[in-house]
Length: 74
Image 1 (spheres, rainbow, N blue to C red):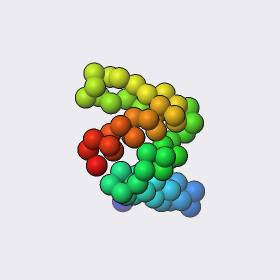
Image 2: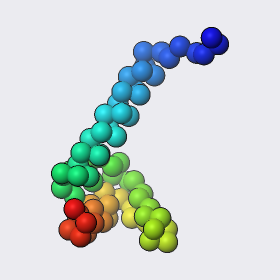
Image 3: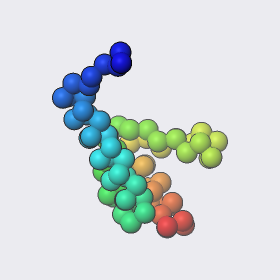
Image 4: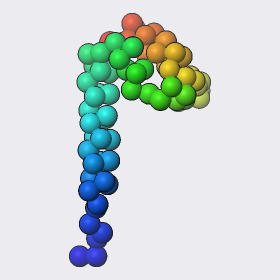
């Protein structure tokens, strides 16, 4: 069919990404700000586009953002 067959590493990477997505979704509904922030790289940047591009840098700012968000909307 002309499609490349994924390698074992590619399949493992895809499974890891899917697991991360599922974990994030579960924590977004039932987790804490600490648990959600732990999913992010320590130097990650998170942008809330509906806040006119306001960014949050680093795990602490991301954690604080989720703490605020969960307090209001969860």
